Length: 79
Image (cartoon, rainbow, N blue to C red; front, side, top):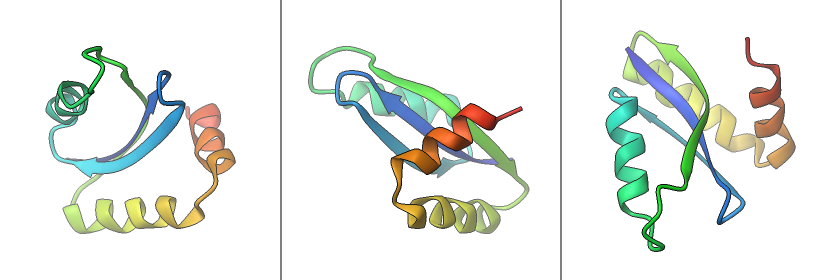
């Protein structure tokens, strides 16, 4: 399964949208790249897809909204 995910950094007050087949590994990579030496990125939301193509399409759709309020709405309304 492929995942489209939203991460949030409290320190940077920033969201990040991506897609991956291994969500745990991807989160670890994000936190290893943190310049401040802390594991700041938190998983806030994800959706699962059968194919990478579907995940990439959804990732592009989410990124095209370009609104923080859209991301926060997804996070708030998840089931």
